[in-house]
Image 1 (cartoon, helix red, strand yellow):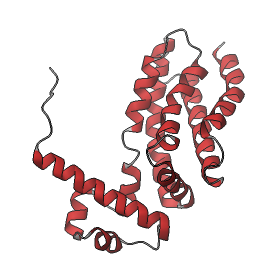
Image 2 (image 1 turned 60 degrees about the vertical axis):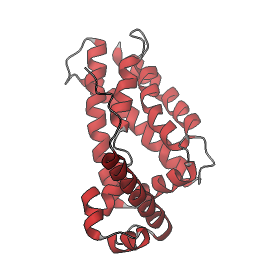
Image 3 (image 1 turned 45 degrees about the vertical axis):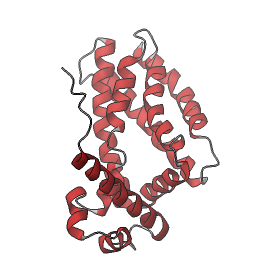
Image 4 (image 1 turned 90 degrees about the vertical axis):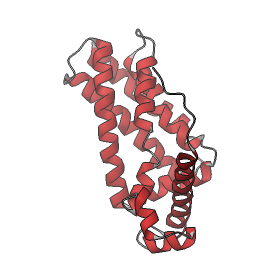
Length: 204
């Protein structure tokens, strides 16, 4: 039985505070740089205390990484929903396009672009992002293996999903380095056009 209860006033307040802290932090981090921005800077700009900040975020890097928190579930849902007979490369392209659409199709794409640039230019954030991608990759590999009737640790689903995330990372990095001029959807399509023959041959 699903819980359709609307969020309480306290829950809405917590969400608003979390979003305000996140927006303030992202603006400062993108404008000043990761190393140059402290938690004290963020809370001062938001008009809040360090204690309040740490109720919602363990560190300033968590502010950035949590922006991507739900993408893994959305990509998994997309892969699970693809037609059973669809080639794996096509299904995986649709799955990772969820992340591309989140970034390039976000209500404030310029702000998201700044965050993507920040992640790629900051080693600690890039490392955290890759860790999260590794978890997403493992989850998608399980879904792909099930779709293909293979064991979860079979080589093909593992390699296919790793290649898909390599394509995603390359497309986002290219989008970031061109200041948003390159079309990440077009870049992703080109990347998967290169991957498709290899994935088809390997599957056979």
